[in-house]
Image 1 (cartoon, rainbow, N blue to C red):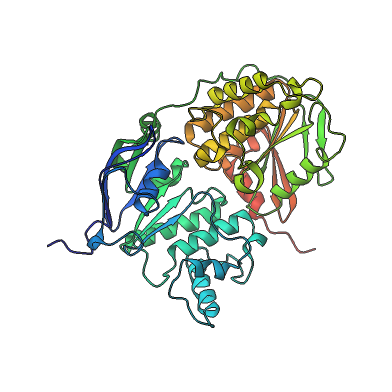
Image 2: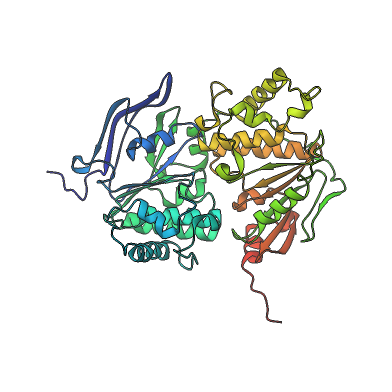
Length: 474
């Protein structure tokens, strides 16, 4: 008889999920055992989210079989999910959000134990987090909201978590907070828990996973111990799904005159890629928001917009959820083809089709609803919207959340090519690797610019030093 402690938490046998003619998952077999930390990787649209929803019980398989330990259902088996798109209720407090998934919290005094439990979970994963369990979620930063959702995923909630599925859990976290989460994952798995870790940040996958599974077009195309992969081997296994983009190196021109200057000291020249860095929540997003609003809020909206915006918080600031993919892309360029206020529908369709192919948006028809896409493909639509516009300045607020590594490289190349043609980019990112691709970097600390780095001085060490440097007493 199999020992319960060593038996798989969940086993999939040739599991498939079809949505009409679309084979989102096409015959997947795998087992997740206690102590496993499985890195699940693949391009956007490869089937990762569908697989997760089969494991957590959100979807039923079209064919095949899914078995949980002792024949229970996902919830009773201790399966938890932390989704890429934050699913907290913004009008409730942190403690009240825990109550939604905690059946044991009942009676008139349930709020006190709820506050204690969520605070203990936050303290365990993110020491010195500073989050008040009585705070309403819509008052928290996106990083704090992600921390709360992760803490709820690992919280006891009446029964211990045995398998926690983490979908892009560090996408809104700065490096220091992300390291705290990775350390907790290692402890959790060492104590007999299991984790399915989905991330496009390969360094994190290699750090925490003991096994890596590569999905492509709904199938497992590679599965082996992490030590048996190299980074390049993992990229090769994933394959390349976006159109080839011309490398912009060699066509970079001298920078033009200064065209952006704020009271805070943030500046940019024509054709320059300017990065904003530092610990999350130290004023970078607010600085970009002020800049965008100062140059886009006039009622005298001209034919050519001055700035375009790529949001990192898709649900709140990015997608238009009731519109099609086509409309979400073309809204930034409607005036260019319009005559006497009437939209040229053929030109609109051509713009959407061009960017669908150029940036690799995985859909059969751009007239489908935007929410039919995976989170990463929705983010591609936001890039397409900004780059399709004629705006001379593009503002990007941590835009690579949930975007696969292949598409990231293509977007980097497109940004360099557009900059070489004279377009200016202001780019906030929580990923130091991205910031180091910029021409100039402003590091923020306590809502002020603490350092301005250029050229060879743009290094991870210098960025971290400027992020954490303590102000001397006057």
